[in-house]
Figure (cartoon, one colour):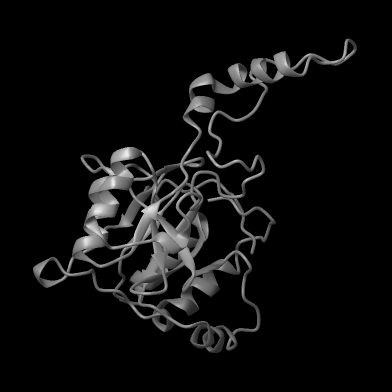
Length: 256
């Protein structure tokens, strides 16, 4: 699937980190109160972040000296300061995916959640989708249009997650066959849409990934007694998401 990495509009400010909240707090809330299975994301390579672009470049140059006739790098050139902590240099979603443990380890067990985030307090919170909650995401600028359209129609929305480049609407679990029937009604479906169903995952606030902070554009509203937030069904929102996505040019970048 593809997406456009356009500049976000000022109205869409969901990428701001939530004050007073920590990844462990969110992970425990999701796992124990709402029964949403979570696991830690791979996160960012803090060593590379501390070195900065020039520091990382100096290390690379020391290991692999350039040819004598090579053109010197311009000031500030070098690897990006934020890189994924996984071993893949061309990671498509740096910092925002499972690594160790893998996705199948997602749990609602409080002891396991506490152990994970005690060892890695800044690890992103990943929600394993498809069991108790699913999601649909699209590029941020398309998300602005979709949310406005849904609000004008009076559609009741559930939680909405925003990263610097994506917008994700949390919805009730759906099956691929059900989704296929809904999408089959459209002549064309933008490839920038992503479907986070069974076997998928979604990064939750207040995580930090390579593209920046993750925040709530629409904060979860817990149900009675602190039960899991209400979630709309996929058929209520998918037409508006497709319509908004068709106005975004497709590109081949899969970044969050």
